[in-house]
Picture 1 (cartoon, rainbow, N blue to C red):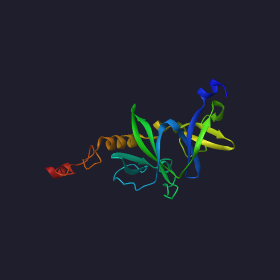
Picture 2: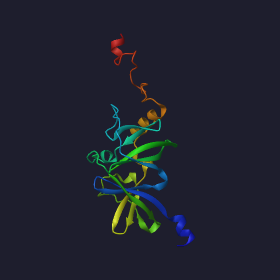
Picture 3: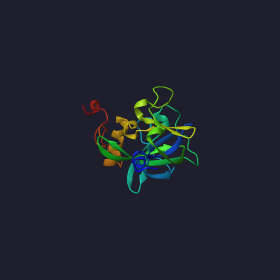
Picture 4: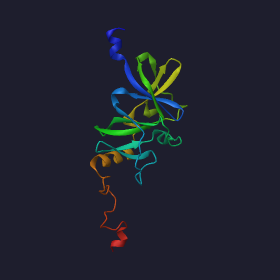
Length: 185
């Protein structure tokens, strides 16, 4: 391998989800957790499975299967949560992403990655960096910064700000104020 090849090659963590194989840049992955209880939070997007406590930090958990229009991820002994760093409005944010199982770390060069197809996948094209070829397999390479929607970003911001630690989230009624402004009159 030549020095220029090393610079152009990138590593991805591959994982299975809803019968497909996906990959995220290895530098985005902070850790991999065995699935633990996720606390559901009312009035969140369908793709937000809930939150976990990660060493005192509230971390939102996104169910990518639900995000991609598939059935919600069923929890098994192989189910895990990838703790990843995504950029939310230019700022780094820690988010959990559910996976059916982690596969392996793959290394891809420029010749191993094709542009994302405009059809034939459950994933929107703008969510993909491309399709990686690994032997005879194809791995959909996700752009996590784009996958996470505005609603999910707002939820992640509120979680990071502590709004989910008993304090009302922006727009929520406080315990002392009526939920319906008409009741105040």
